[in-house]
Image 1 (cartoon, one colour):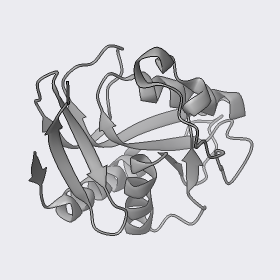
Image 2 (image 1 turned 30 degrees about the vertical axis):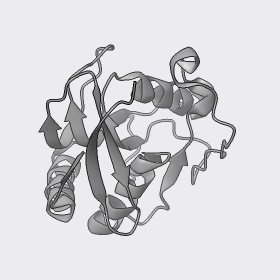
Image 3 (image 1 turned 45 degrees about the vertical axis):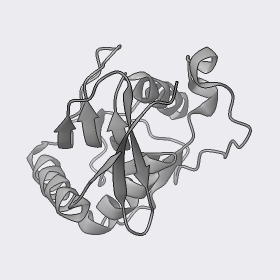
Length: 176
């Protein structure tokens, strides 16, 4: 196991990229011109989103998604008995710009599940995906718009983000 440091600087870089994207995205005639709605994916994505939300000084409350019921890989990861409800500041996201935040983009299945849940609330005008870490091993054609760092790992390694107050990102080997 080893840890990756300097996450606050990475979050600052991500926030600057998001600021640029938010000001560069022109409003279309049918798009909602409100500030973007930021949504974090439970658990690590919410922690990252809380910091980005503060750095961007977004006014609307942060949304939180728990995608447990939208997953397609229960046979691999098992059922998790502790399921918390999703919490979005608005029930209608039609026409909104959504900034979807997660800690690690790996297979793409978590993001697919999150998008399925988001579309149950409405049809956003745009979804920007921001992730702290993008790693190899994609199984679905999903790509992040804003990436804090890229890490190459073997299939026997995984990333674990510990937080939420001070972040520690660890790389560990899967136990056999």
